[in-house]
Image (cartoon, rainbow, N blue to C red; front, side):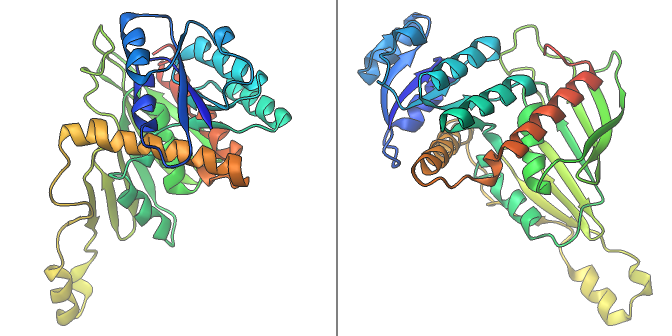
Length: 325
């Protein structure tokens, strides 16, 4: 498949992911405004730099990776769908725009995927694996995040719970502090989401002190994802040990107070910010290529899941006063 990447800020991550990709994907162009960074990237890759999607030859691309935020990204995605190209778009996407893109793709027999990214990190997989094995619903969940990571945090929670619907916000606490707190329920599980409401003046990530901290609590204990980079911890609840026979009580007391479910040696920041994230983007590209080739759609790209995440994001942003963040 011939691939064009739109945008060269986060779009450069897709360029990295495409090198040596095993799904038959080939970079054939970059769409960007023409900055020095964009020209240099296109030159290093040996592909044309297009100043707009209209410059891309019709019929010359099979897949557009749209790593451009906001209305401009939405328009690029729609333009490429109308030109007959599949689209892998970056989050977040407003519900109305997402509905329109999904409808356009369905009408034209194309594949539209939305990359929320962080649940595809290998450091998150142990958390999701425990959730997949659970035979009972959690009692409640807590999330700590920031405006940039809220959308992907909700995608991660949706995958952990097997869905977000029905989703309802029950109340919110906002003020002059650094956090806005939103309470509600998702798929029958009560939640509390703390979202950082105060960012640095320059939105470059340096002021995002928390991003993907998720905890799910069952009767038997709590599963912690401390960050997207890990670690994942299981903390059991001992229960009323004094009511147990002495031998059983001794066995309970002998259990670890917590268990580390990820490797004891943490990844370096380079591994997390580069290697792991490149592999996650390769997974997203491979997932789309498989659906194009076989028609098999991964559950995390089911339109119902994508729309549930987008609507949940909209509701939490509105309740927390984060619109426009």
